[in-house]
Length: 211
Figure: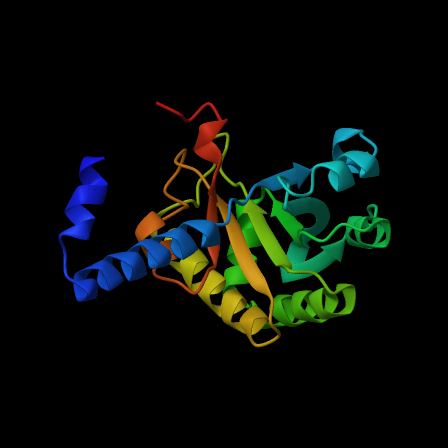
């Protein structure tokens, strides 16, 4: 074949270099890790955990974000007492990443948190260490009905909070992901991307804010 003929006319040094480049390319390709994070909504959505499905498909569904905690009034870290999915899945043999969700739709609760985040962060970190999870997923979805407060100032303060929270988690070998969308100014993509947050999950792929 023409390729073989061309190679045989090259010097040994060039052939060796080509082989090295091909080897590097193959190794890099093999290192690509496809990652799919599943949103596991159980009690909040009126569903049971199908553990067998998690185990059977864990090579594809290799990360799980599960409903667990809320942001409460006065910047409190609230345990919803839901199924401890991290324990259920680990006991069943699940090897993927586990992210406990922290949720709220209240801009007032969020603004309270921005003023005094330290106690909330400390409580979350302590719980994450105890539960031996990969990290947390922040799912704050305020101003869905046009409430006031989701302005540029709130967006900046939220990004600062995420940065502080992520750094606290990193000191304990945990990670932080955050859910974002475009239905208000609350999510400043540029500021969030400049923070220490490990990953961003875009909700616009399935919400009505998609244009």
